[in-house]
Length: 161
Image (cartoon, rainbow, N blue to C red; front, side, top):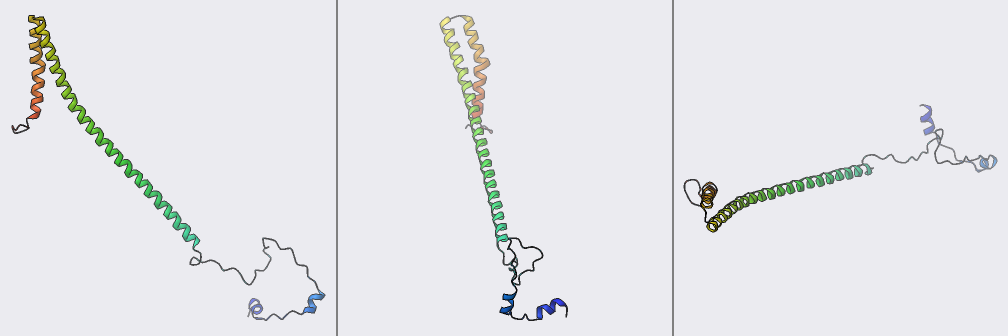
């Protein structure tokens, strides 16, 4: 048996009150930090084990939940941005189609208006040059644009739309 085991097994005799009255020991001032030379008390605080201490687990769980929430928010923002981009792209496509249709129609309208202006001018001036300008304008501008516009309405296979 070694000395530590012997001390642990040896019973401690009870104190004698007269011995305390003869010798008075001065108690040292208690400090907040125990010095390393002090012996530990026999009743130590229990060391927390992973099964006892749930604060670490709760902290990790809160971090995972925060990361998951941040990832979901980022994913929602990305999906909203893609939806917005696709809606914007579709709207721009629709506006481009409308502008092309209106540009062709406006071009046809301006062409016909120019032809009517030249016809009225030829009738009011009653000169040969006015009639030739009207004929040239009709052959070179009005008829080709009218054929193009009419040709757009005819579908492949000869069926009218």
